[in-house]
Structures are given as structure tokens and as C-alpha cells.
Length: 78
Image (cartoon, rainbow, N blue to C red; front, side, top):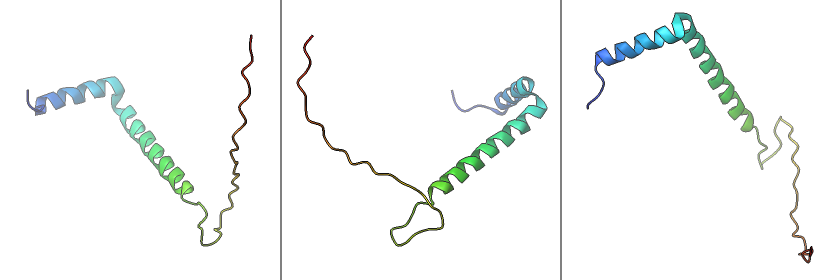
């Protein structure tokens, strides 16, 4: 059981074309490209965090919450 031959790939291609049609494949690839662009844009937006050297042009508000342990209470008895 080696790799697939050319005939196997041609049969797979014909099945894909029958299922999706000629017009659906370019539309699908365009949607994939839009998704990749959106992902890259979102990742570059995350890179705009403030540097410790000085403020940046973007303003971000961050809130810190100090965690204080609570005292253990006696368990209630039913």
C-alpha cells in the first residue's frame, strides 16, 4: 500500500468537482483567504501592548485584581 497514483487523484478531483461544482471552489478559497487575513489582523492588534519603555499611541485600559485568600468558615450542618 504505497502512495496514491495519478488515477486516484483524478478520481478524487472529479468527485470533489461533482460535489461542490466549479463555482463553489473559488468562493470557498476566497472565504479561507478572508479568514486568514482576519486572523493576521487580530494577531497584529494583540501586538499593540504598551512597552515598559514608554507609552504607545494606542490606549488600553487594564484592571488588576488582587487575590486575597478568604478565611475558612465552618461548614454548615444540615
